[in-house]
Image 1 (spheres, helix red, strand yellow):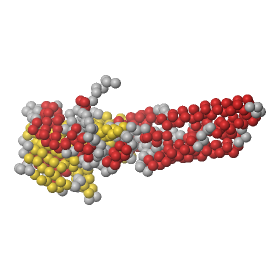
Image 2 (spheres, one colour):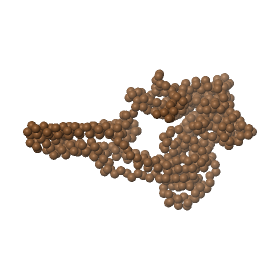
Image 3 (tube, rainbow, N blue to C red):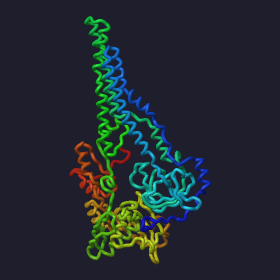
Length: 558
C-alpha cells in the first residue's frame, strides 16, 4: 500500500471476477439480508408488570389488602399508591435504557467493498451473500464471516468478540468474523456466512438465552423483606393472642393484629431504594455509562479491585518517537503529534546510523501519517504511524524507498515471535529488516551492549523497539521459514517511543484510592516501562511490586 495526496492507495493482488450480479441477487433471495436477527422486544406491559409483582412489591400489596380488611382504607390506598408510583418510575427508567441499548446493538457497517462482475464496487453490507469476494483495508469493519484468500500484513481487532484489545495478525486461509475491524494491512476474502449464520449472531443468541441471576442487592433486599415479613406476621399473631387473653372480642383483636402487622412493614423502603439507584444511574448516564437495570448500579459499588491495561487506557495511545540509539551514537527527536516537521538533535557522527534505523523501522511498519483536512492524522496502528513519522522527520521519503526496494515478503507481528520481518529487494541483493521487542530481537542478532540502553529508556517510561537488518542468507528463498531468514541479522539500533498519560487518569487513580479500590496494571511492556508509567499516573506506591510472567503461580495451582 502506498500513500497518495489524499490518503492510502491500495495495491491488492489482482482480484478474480467475483460473483455476477444475477447470482448475487439469487443468493440474497436464498440466504436473506446480511443483518443480525432482531430479538423479540419485551412487551412494555410485561416490564411494568414485573415492576409491580417482585417480592417486595407483593409484600406491600398484601399489607395494603390487610389494611383495607382491618378497616384502614386510607392506609391501604397510600401503600398501593407507593407501589404503583415506584413501579411506574422504575419501568420508565428501564424502558428508556432498553430502547437506547437496542439502538447501540447493530455492529455491522453500512457498506462493503466487493468484486461483482469483475469490477470493484461498494454495496450495502446488508446485500452481502455467501461467495462474495470482499476487499479489506485498514479501517474497514468486517461485515460477514470471511475466509481470507490473500492477506498482506493484516491485523484484525477482535475485541467485540473476544474482549482482547490487541489486534490479531491474520494470514491467508484464516477466518475473519463479522463485527471485527481491520487495524492494518489489506486482504481479499470470500464470504462464508451472513446474517444469522455468523458467529456474532450466535453470540447474540447465546446472550439472549442466558439466565440472568439476581444481583447482590436484589438477594440481600429479598432477605431483608423475608425477615421483616416473618417478624411482622409473628408479632401480629402475638398481639392477637394477647388481645384475646385480655378479653377483647375476636373482631377487635383481629383489627389490632392487622394494624400492628401493617405498621411493621417499611413501605418507605421500596421508593427509597429505587430513588437512590435512579439517582446513581442518572449520574452514570451523565458520564456516558448506560444502565439498563437499576439494581445493576449496586454492582459498581461492590468493586474491590480494578485490572487495567496500559496502552490506550492509562496512556493516550498517541505515540511519538523521542529517542533513537545506535552503536555509533544517538538522537533526540522533538515534534508535535504526527506532523512530519520536527527537530533532531544528534550526538557524534550518528546521522547515517539514525537514518538506517529510521528507514528500517518505517519499512517494517504499515501505519502511515496522512494529511486530512489540513491536519496530519494516523492511518493504522499508532506505534507504526510513529515509526513512519520518525522517517519523515529524518528526511526520508518512505514512498521513494519502497519504489527503489520493493517488498518481497512480510511476516506480520505475532505474540509468539514478538517481531515483524520484511524482505526487500536491495539493488543486486535482498535484505531482511526486523523490528520487535528488544529481548526478542537481541536474542537472534546479539547486540548485548544495547541492554543497558534498553533499561535506561524503559526507566524513562519509553516503549522500546529494537531494529535489525541483514542480507538474505545464502540458499534461503524469501518464502522460506522466518527463522531461517533471520540468520544473518545485526542490530541497527533502538527506538524509544513516548505515550503520554491520558488526561484525567491521575484523578481517577486518586478516586479509586479514596474508595479503597485496589488497582493492578497489566501490560506486555518492559517491567521498567510499566513502573515508570505507573509512577507518572500515581498508580505505583513505594512498596508496589512489578511481576513478570515467571513470577506468577502456574495455572494448575488453586
